[in-house]
Image (cartoon, rainbow, N blue to C red; front, top):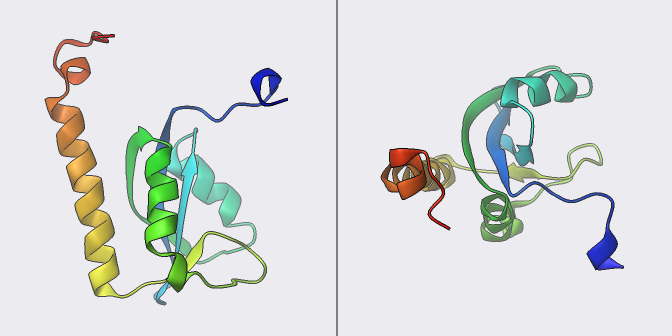
Length: 117
C-alpha cells in the first residue's frame, strides 16, 4: 500500500556529484544527511571518491539528472548511480546546481524564513 508506507523519501535532500579519483566516472546521488557523512560511507567501497559539488533541494532534481544522463550510466562494480561524464556534462550539472541555488536565494522562503503556503 503506497499510502501507508513506513519509509518515505524526504522532500528536501542534498544532491551530490562525486568523482572516482581523477577518472571520468562520477556518482550522482542524494542524502538526507550531509554530503560529508555520505562520502564517509561510500569510501568503504570506493576509497578514492571525492566530493565535487552539491545542492540542497527537492529530491526530484536527482531523478531528473539520472534521466538526463541515463545513456552515460556505467556499471561500477555492481553499484548504481555512476556515470561516465565529460567536461560538458559536468558544466551542465554545475549549471543546474547554480540555477537551483539562485532560485532558492530568490524564493520567499529564503528571504523571510516563512513558508508562503
